[in-house]
Amino acid sequence: MCKPHLALYLTTIAVSLAVSLGYNRASSMLSDSAEVREQKLFLFWVLYIFDTSFSIRLGRSPTIRDHDVAVPLLPDNGTIPRALVHILYNWIELGRVQCQVVEQLYSPAALAQSLEQRTQHASTLAARMQEVWVARSQVSVDDLLIGRPKSSMTLLVHSDAITHYSTLALVQHATDTTHNRNSPALDTSRHALWLSVDIWLKHAGYTESTWTAHCHWFLLNAPFTPFTVVFCYIIANPTDSAADLRLLCDFVEGLKASTHLSAGIAKLHHFCDRFRKVAELYVERKAENPTQQEGGQNPEDQLQLVQQSNSEVEEYLAALGFLEPMQSDEAAGNDFAGMFGQDEQLHAAYMRNWFHGNTALMGASEECLSYFEYPENGR
Image (cartoon, rainbow, N blue to C red; front, side, top):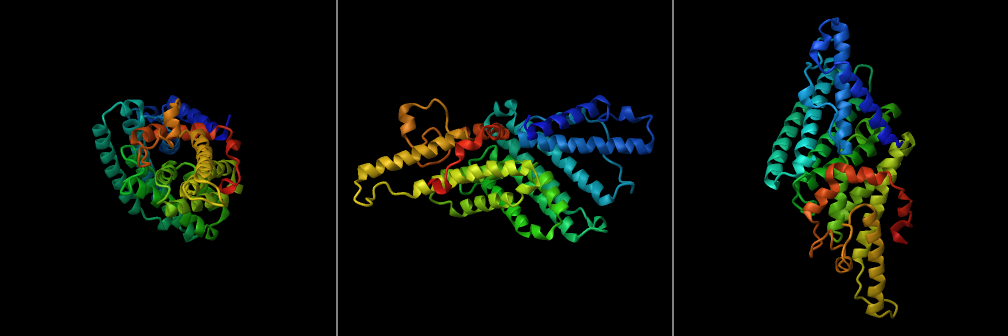
């Protein structure tokens, strides 16, 4: 079993055991001492946070549903540092919103609703995301700095920002198109990737354990949306995406510098690097002019070579799940006609179906990626 699925499997077992033991019901703790009750509450809410973060990352419904939870939050009685308690409060609220994102925007029932209904849900959830983020910004972490470098708490704030903007991009992308230059999802995605790159550039100031915690707790758990949104924009606008391609490359480079931390980070880098190479190759091919003669080659021969190059890129995109199956010969001859319109704009409905809850990405990540082992820049 692959490690991401093993982690999900173990988390699901732990959550199921907690629910079976009644940790989600206040009635099951009536005879417990205050200390034991607090320990059970802490364990339950940490599992809840794990469950929701795994769910939104993998595009599945959480095991613990909010309507099954009948226990209070952790008491703020000084047993646990107050700042940590309030950070957990914020993560729990974020988890609740993430559950609603999956159920109201990406579940089969949600996808069966009209675009107007889903747009209304997305607007409400985006507003709720902002409320949760404002509350997070008001949490003071000063009492957690005792005995710890200030950079650790700075990283925690920035890591929470990555999770926030990644989740917000997921909400906005549910009813938006990635090729739209004025897309809120695109701007949010760019900001999330920029935060990741900025943190990586400064990570030399963090301890190894702190940086490892950031990579595994936040980077691996945050929704994959920003990366795919920016990637889709590059593919839809290959002649006007130099800055976005650079951002994508910088993000992948940051992952590369952390691959020694674990097999999970190494696999994430390997997967993102395939997308990065496809984006670079596609932009390069689109920049070529098939009508210009080079070296005495006639236009017909050069056009044939470029069409072969485009076919090569098409194979890579198809392997990533970006081309609709069973295209007609006519559609296949029209450069990526199944995914693009006449102006190379992504069909919003098709992209939402492809993206649906990251399922396609997680499925593709389990495939043999040696298919993409071609030289840099396609040479």
